[in-house]
Image 1 (tube, rainbow, N blue to C red):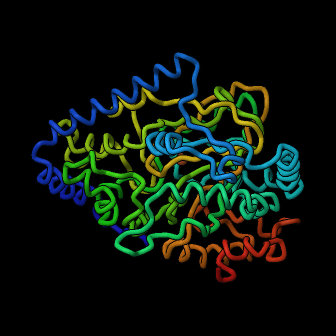
Image 2 (image 1 turned 90 degrees about the horizontal axis):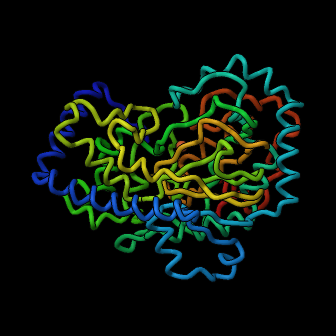
Length: 416
Ligand SMILES: [Fe+2]
């Protein structure tokens, strides 16, 4: 659902005043949160200095065998991110990566995109040069990866990390998935045009002003942040977004991507602040007295929510590279988690990914499917993204015939 606001500054001033009134001891509370974040930062820094990765890892085989212990689950939930290894075989991924390259070049993507670079304004600093992220949604490899049974099982495992039932009501069905068509990244070695500074998606100022988000964060805004459970799905499917290209209108339990090439630290790829409760720090930080009344620490409508050197120095210390991923490995992060993309790709090979998040069946996601389905049939860009419509006349674009039985359900074309 769209959140339409006429005078954003006025709403921010009013909302902040209300939230502050409900938090008379904000200074004391914030000190506790700072202490918590500082402890986590210290644990993370120590691990990195010892050469250990701080992003938890599991293997697809262990998910399939239901062989993941509770300690691993606890750390995944604390860090808010996880690498799932070996979801796809290297040979299959190599084939898909090659096929994607051919799909783009033979259909003339590079020539087309000269005229369309201005259409995507989500990241204001994004420069228009040779594309590194492609507005491609309906290639055969993307369809195959999204509807793959191993992908479905991985997502079901991720969804089941959440509490999805509230008073007997199912917030979402963790074992049924709605396809959220997203783009691909093909980043060439040496590229310095596609760094993304640390940010969270799934809402910027909405996290303070939207009624749905205020309920999600109720235990933060009433001062009992220790009771805030980031994996409690209640109200998460009831939030509204300020409309803008590249702002997601679905509920994702995890954002994520699948590695199409080997990539790790310094390969121009993902970094994470692996502290899911960093959002507590961000939310309280904007309510402190040193922030102007009409400011939420620089959060802007319709944009990504920045974790910035000006306001969030402490948590930025925990910004960590992902470990070396092999083709077919996947990485996932909670929608509250701050992430970034390295400014420079200093590696030797392309760092390519298919963006595939986890968006389980619920009314919000199923509403989106009905709009997305029409785009699929016409080959248009997925509805949450800039209206570039590159693929309308592309040869070898996926059609209904390419959807499996599972794929049709996930796309909302047939009932579960
Ligand atoms: Fe992002």
